[in-house]
Length: 316
Image 1 (tube, rainbow, N blue to C red):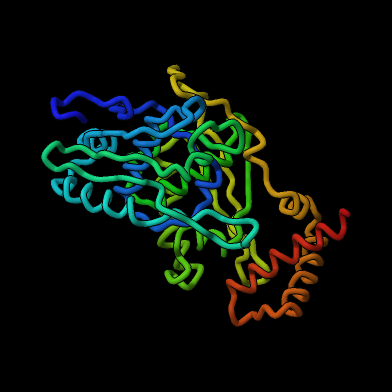
Image 2 (image 1 turned 90 degrees about the horizontal axis):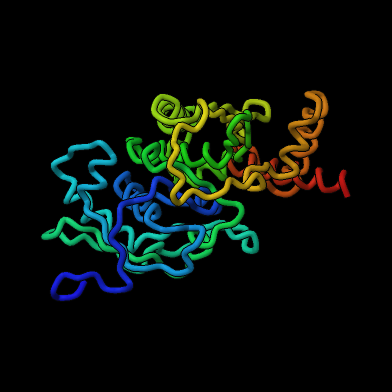
C-alpha cells in the first residue's frame, strides 16, 4: 500500500469468492502443513479468478476474516498466523513429476507475511504456480470455501479435496490411490508405520468429519493383496442438489479430471478370479524385479507397477 493508505494497482483486497479452484495436480501434491496454513491458502486462492486471471497480484486478507469463516475463536490466532505465513513462504509444495518418477517442489508463495499491527496477511503467489491456479480449463477441482474451511484438521481438508476431485454430482464415483502414494501425499512415510494405525489416526477420523460436516459422503476401503493393503478405494456421493445459487467465480466441472487411470478401471472390471491371477503374477514379477515383502510399502508399490505393466501388455 502507498504511504497514504491507498491500494496500489498490483494489490487486491476483496472478499473471498465462494469457490476454491485448483489443478488436480495440486490436490495430489505432497505437503506437510498445519491447519492455519491450509486455511490461509484456501482463502487466498478463493480471491483469484482462476478461469480468467492471467497473473498474480499482491493480496491482503484480515486474519479475523479467516477466523470468522473457520468458525473458531482461538486467542492465539495472531501467533498462529505469524507462524503459518513464515512457513508458507519457506516450505514447498511438492508436485509429482512423471519424467522423474518422483516429487519436486517449491514454495507456493513468493511473498507471504503477517502484519501484526494491522492484523493483515499480505501475500503473492509464486509465478511457478500459474499452471496450478490460473487459466484452468481442464483437470481441475472446485469446491465451496465455506464447506472446507471449518474442517478442523489438515487431514480432513485434504480428504475433502480428494472427495471433490472424484465427485460428479448425481453419480456415485470411485477411484483408487496406491497406499504408498497416499502416504507421500500426506507426508506419512515416517508416521503410523502400521496401516491400521494410519487408518485409526488419519483416514477414519477425516472421513467421519467430512461426512458429518460437508456436502459429500465418502467411503474409504482397503484394497488388499493377501493381507497387505496396496491401495485405498475412495467412493464418493453427493448429499443432494446444489443449493448455492450464487455462481460468481464458479468454473465448469470437467469430467475428464475425474477419470481413473486406465489400468485401475481395467483391473476393477475383471472377475474376482481374474483379479486373483493378475495379483499373483504381479507379485511374482515384483519379486523378480527386486521388491521384497519384508518392506511392505515398497513391495505394494511394486505390485501396483506390475499390474500397470500387465495391463499394457494385454492391451497393446
